Image (tube, rainbow, N blue to C red; front, side, top):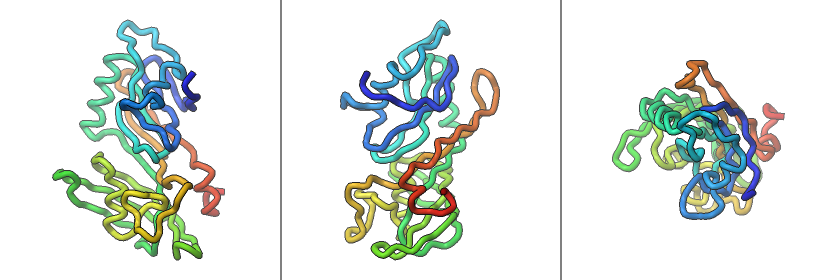
Length: 212
């Protein structure tokens, strides 16, 4: 076995798994979530069963919930749900600096419209960073590095973001505080509403009383 993955939900068509930090979803590297899936997921017994495949991406440093298709028709159907923007994604991040209680960030990323809604959940004072915030994020589009770029663009980068953080406020060795918390969608084959959460990582809980 390459490494163990936590499976949050699974049926004959799809699975929802927890993606750890510091692992690529897919790519040329040997240690990827995609390569580890066959050892962690029960093979579908349906006629078009195939090698399980992630149907969206999370960044290398991001933790959280990842949707996987287990059959050829399921992979196609799940990709279509993302294209139609009918999958509701909620992320949480820890950001730096005093933020407004809520807002909509709308910009272009790679020449395409990118929109994210955010809500401030809790703030704590920090000796090094001034203020740290627990922020709920609801991306309305799915551009590459969208949430990271959006938060950095309004002057409140994600704690531990080495690419879009502020130079003197980079947190080394602790990873990036961005977590894909939940996915909600209508199952394309059973028509049941799926709402799956992936609980907060311990490092989030250490910072904020509301999570304890």
